[in-house]
Length: 116
Image 1 (cartoon, helix red, strand yellow):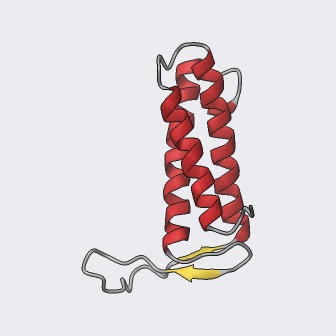
Image 2: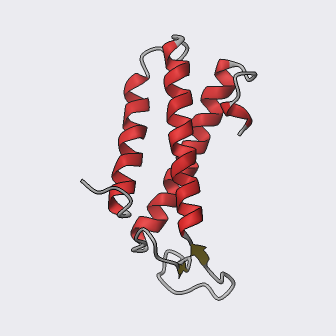
């Protein structure tokens, strides 16, 4: 994650963090929609718009390790975005950072990774 390093410019850090959080949230959404729950392992198969299974795609295995990695990426990206926002570079985009953070929290609750 070069965008997470202090050596990157604030603009590079912000772009990289937003890209990473968007990708990780998409992956977490796939896991949620497929019914993945914390601690389980199963295969998710890609379905085209017509709803028919794609024989060319064997599916993607959802594991605890992958899902945890996506959550960790989100946590790091939100931290980076908050740091960059504090410099004034994002100019009023703090609400977007908070929305991303809420999205991560919502996904982790849906996956059973957080208990209240």
